[in-house]
Length: 364
Image 1: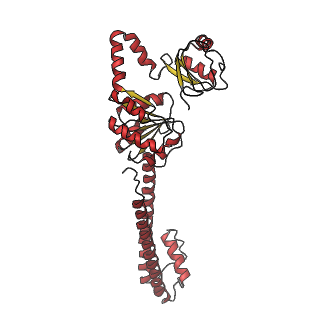
Image 2 (image 1 turned 90 degrees about the horizontal axis):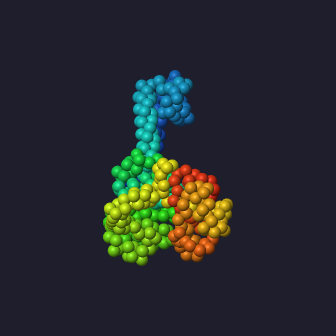
Image 3 (image 1 turned 180 degrees about the vertical axis):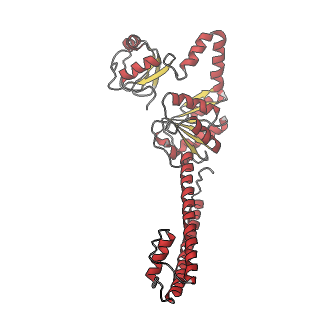
């Protein structure tokens, strides 16, 4: 079952286990002492016995139970041998129990690891709340771009599906009740770059946003909505990016009707390029090592085209309030921590990465 937040149940379970352990140890110790005393009574009555005191009896019993069997001591009376048979059966039972417990422990550890109960340590990753066909498409794009993803799902069957599709180094999965916000610490949500709310309907998404914002108000959130009229509602609730599926679909379909080549190019640009020949829109942060730092946007536009065959289409200023300038005019200076937006294919990207000293993507 998903992780529960009822700590009282866990405390009660621990108390029950401790009682069971205490009873088992007590009964075992009493039984062991009775058997040793019985063994000594049988053996002491025989003149040729080599088990003559309590120390000898303890030594022989331990050697027997552990199946070491030195043969230096052994019962010679009928009663002693019957007790020896009991110890032999006990030794088999002990090993059976140990092997069973170890097997169960290993199976439990592996199952808990698969369900994500031991947590993860990634930073700057994307967290997807909820799973489905749409979530998988988003994950495919993120993984193709080399981004780390953590998926939180309430359906145990999704765990196996995700593990079959992605390696654990790419996509971490957590099986949990989605209403239990505290378990999100296991996906290191505090250090996530963004959280994608991927639930079944707009109402669920809005309720979840209002709840999670109480715990993690400073994170960036993205939501897709079915009802475009709710966009302002979600923005007011604190969602950073709200995407209307119907608006995107209608615009793309309309574009295919009257300008199909533009639509085809746009569809390629907004997805991650899978080959070096395909183009997509890329975003690179300007670091101190960037050769275009403190240069004019216009000059960089021509330099990038000549040096990398990339087309600069915009810049994001981050000094005060984050602001996107689309193909700006005038004397725009490229400053530290700005982001440059450009259209480039895989070949151009390799050149830009070497030139800029950073990979593409939003890193704040």
